[in-house]
Length: 376
Image: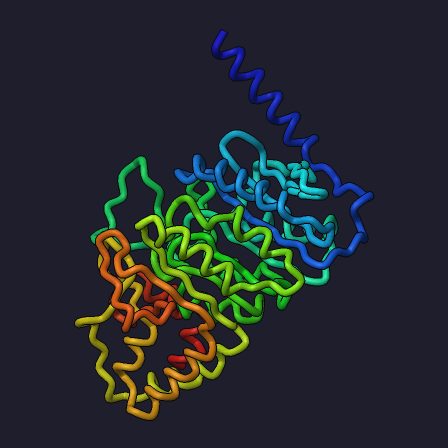
């Protein structure tokens, strides 16, 4: 009986996979609104239980949106359902979660194929004058893989790799950057660990104007969506307030948080200063005494400004400080993040990698735009 039940289930799922790839409803096509925000949620991992609360918060947040000038779309892949694109509406204060399209499960959500499809469907269903993107999942920054001695990986734990974990399949940052359309998103909020790197911000510089992220881990409960979603649909988004809401949510509860808001249009002057600093042949890098942001493993994410200034002349250090402050619009950090101590005087809001500190990642690092711009 059990064997027959399993066989029947496989047949039904296969039929559903063929029939679930619905077309976008024509009734919504062409109705351009002020802003559409897409939450790209990959919850087929050990964060799955936290996704329910965050979705409930999104619905609560949209209930506070009193105009019809915005669309909150949620792409969710979870253990309990096929990948689905939803519209979360709050018209007249009554929130609803409406299925827009379901997708076959044979394509992982960490592939460029699936993400491109979802982004295209978002533009078809909810065309807007401006767009925002929230990336929700696990992440390990740009890192390809922690070295064996840096993290113990058991059979029951995931292996880290860049953004997203969909049944242990992951998405390299270089692939993420390629699939995102140039200049489509006014802001990208990375609600995922270790995404607050100068390397990632620079990789996404042509994809978004503003980038919100954390150089440390993020708490599994994510940002307070009920507080931030209404802000997403204000005529002029106050992204500083969005960051403050997230930081204050955790700091006021005695928990941990780091966050920063970067204007990606102002990253090139930083890259130019860093290029001058790193071209000097008489510079010897050291990690002694540097602020770092990853726990329970060999340090790999170091404070960007503190480290780079240590290599610079006085004038270069001043130029670096000024250009960084010009780009990092907001930054905040609790003085502790679990076992980590964070020195406010050495917190720039961004991390960076130091060549030679993680041989496993060295080759992959050379494929990033930041390496090509700064070190070549």
